[in-house]
Length: 448
Image (cartoon, rainbow, N blue to C red):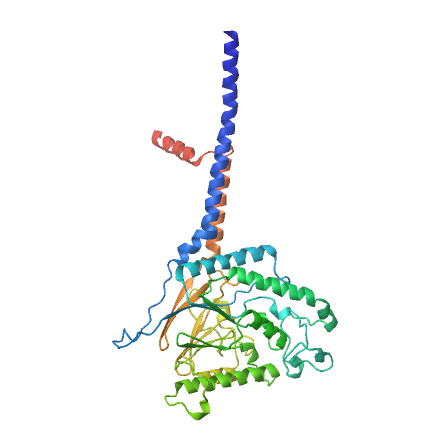
């Protein structure tokens, strides 16, 4: 009997010892499940919940107007702007990880839910392309070997250097060329990982000042390097719709080689568009392939000239303290002269631009609408968004799709973390359970 009592006593003691361990394991399992559910919601599900509310706008077609014949095809287009993929100079690894994951999840979710036919990125795809140095000589407004023996284009044209930019000696730039080339290749690889898309989806981009530099930093090498990643054509026709993609950085109007070439190219596009509008094709139009007889949609990085953002409204417009800041021509927006040329040469029916990181709608000339597309990245604004367009050869309709707000995600994390800390303290007995505390207070209230 004594031996049996001792065995049962040991078994009971062992069970009592294992019971706290079992409870701790159960609590740890619950905490792990809660953390996993939190990550799943904040890093995946929230994008589906937010973007699911977006829908393509309805656009009038010939069938809606009671017309006969084949209805006009509707092209669904996504317009993004200012993704600013960080590089090696200013890119902290945590900043890269957080913001690039946000853009990847937003873009991939939008592709899966909305299924666009074409995606346009309106400049500043990369953040540090302007600092990459040339590996070969070339004409332009900056960056050639001959610049060591003559004034730079920025000096000769009376253009001030970029704020916060310190020019480096040419031999220092040459020493860092292999590193810069590798950095550019890494940035491009990350871009295609984030913005991967199926073959049937067209993805096009226009150059921004962070991709090729402002006018005084721009050179042929940087432009060709950008065009090697993205299709270099300026005129893109798809489903009877003409899109003109302008290198707005080159519209300085100072007669430099790149600027003259850009204007000559736009004049050629203008000629082809005018020929497409003629019912009887004149001889000067030649026998080349005729464009669709559709007024073009103008896509560029810099917005057309406007004084400021004072007339812009909406949740994603510029903050009140920035709205009345005057725009500097050729820096914050195109010059008045360049804007007039584009509207006169191309006669677009719609203009979309980026650069400001904020939303705005402006009417130019004879009622031509310009839409400034906000930044797609949390790095530039708390509530990023993109534009959805349903477009036919004669009509268009636009809608905005907001992405999850960064402060919503951070608030969710902080609230959940505070709750987990409280649960852990309650389990450890360091803090009284809120349920028991409330029950005791209620009993005391009843007894009094």
